[in-house]
Length: 441
Image 1 (spheres, rainbow, N blue to C red):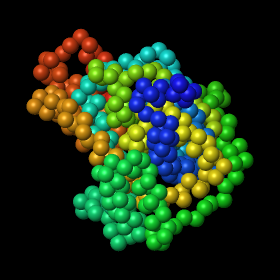
Image 2: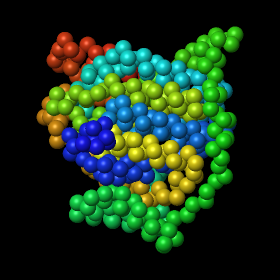
Image 3: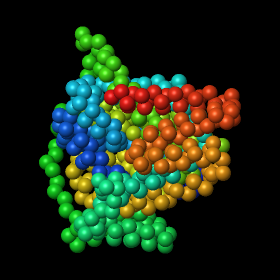
Image 4: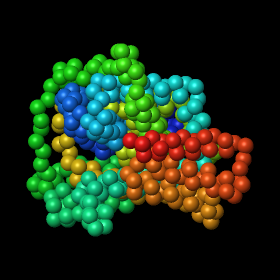
């Protein structure tokens, strides 16, 4: 038995080094956009873009290594979309919080995640989620990432009359994405091994050959990382510099805490279920290690100079490509580490080449809906609300909140209460508090 087989239990999971490596590369290609998008967003908060690019790669690499070695799960991590926008546009620009102080708040939220994990609170929260909602979360995230893929490809765009509508099919990106979608669908139907990765590479090659893709590298220097590394201001976040801790800072900390907690929960459930790693009773093995990796990555990210690090739903693309162990995450981490030196080159693969993979992975994630008892309104209504709220509000956390609140309300109304439901109601209360904080902003 090889070292890798012993470390990641490849044989026990019915996989191989080659399969895991291809899965890791597939996951990386579908989420490499964060290397350019995150600096663009945080740059608007006054942070040096090149430094943020390096911090993005470093924090993603560390998060993936922690996930692979600690938890042995095929889940990749990187600075989260949504939270980076909240950091830049709301916290720094709208509320006037200096970005070093905002990084300090991210650091404190990571420490809180760590404490909640070590005390078992986060594990209890996950155990309180009804099994039917697990299935709805997985399918809802499937619709969510399919919508992300369609939007990234330009096949779906905003429409003032109908909210969303069909994109401009004559655009180069949309045409290339349609070619890629057909190509990858055929490869999947033929059950070609590594079909997702092959499809991405072939679509990229066609894009360059047909002139449907373009890319201009930006100036970049690894040494510029010092502009954000260790620049977080924890004393200011704690109010230790002669200032009081204002309600606004507490509010920011709560948002970082709640959104990261519940977004990660949804991603964890969906990817674990798709990989076949959830036990028959609904429990997730090594859950505490997964959550420790998440918390540790956020702390490292804040020190390096980026917003909250989260588990990525794009990990489902690697799982669809055969990834079942932490070796997939390690490969993703190594690729992010390598990208530290050539960050802008990660965008050489056009979004139109990776978007079809997200669409098709979304289709593969719909199957858990068959596990829901649609004849029971107490189960069906919360599951449906979860399913539709995730893509319609563009938020995993909102979908999970809608499902949990509805489930608690219907159990209370029908008097189908059990002793173990106390935490479900506590969780529903936390979600209501989360919405209250959002409304108060």
